[in-house]
Length: 308
Image (cartoon, rainbow, N blue to C red; front, side):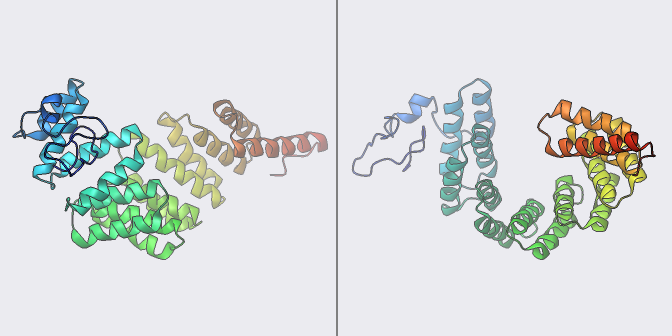
């Protein structure tokens, strides 16, 4: 009862019926002003109904009133977090989570808080937040996410050994959450660990079913194979991504690179031109086009076959 249900500002403490200094509603009048009479038997359903009707303040008030009675309502917190995320109110979300955790909110809020800290590049504090969750719920439903997100921050902080252990733990905890595989592959690619990355990609491809996931991992596979100078296999992988409907600059760039590796420079040039049509500022595409053109011009001038 110390904060306004309408806007969340703190009430002054020197009066029996304080008015909110931010929105002007008194503590006695706020419920009637928002059309909330009492705590709903099912506050999640009641709030969702209010949101569907466009009564956003009423829906939030229903959740806030329920959380006053039970700070452990994880789903209510989740709805509020999603709303703040959709509005881009990262700082407000962080302040809310700090207050919720101080009041004894559910352990899952440590994961939300850790992610919020990552959004503002506060990685040491994010690592600490994820560790707090894992201390409280080592086998909880968010343990895999906590491990993977913590690994992302540790990688940013320059601790690849600890990061890799946590990526592997996240995948072991949730083998079917492909975002863990994707984060781990990106880490391995960034660290140029090509054989290890290829193993993870091939395992993920065996699990993936959605076209978007298959395309992403096929692109990763093509990149890894190109880095290993395996042009034919890289071309096979990127052609499989194209067959699933991909038309992104990355797909066409990787296909151009694979075609160049197998000596099909005219076709590679067509792919790079497609990249630059989709993204005229694509710096690797511009560089690739210059390299391809210089080789093609040299070949025509000398009358020699493409030097490869």
